[in-house]
Length: 92
Image (cartoon, rainbow, N blue to C red):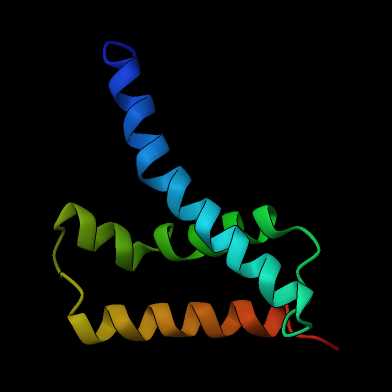
């Protein structure tokens, strides 16, 4: 990353940062309409994405480490992570 800092920055800005911005905007919209209580959309975005990307299942999948999770396991994990997130930010 140090040797290719401009390339790393470009990748981050066009990939992860762009996606996180879109998620945060969506969460702000859900907060404004009263569907979820998300006072800090960017913090919530970081929490959601780290829950998904930080899991052992995702790590094994991305690094191709056996036993590789099945597509069904990946979907189930992601669905449950999102469900947990929604429960945490539901309107009381």
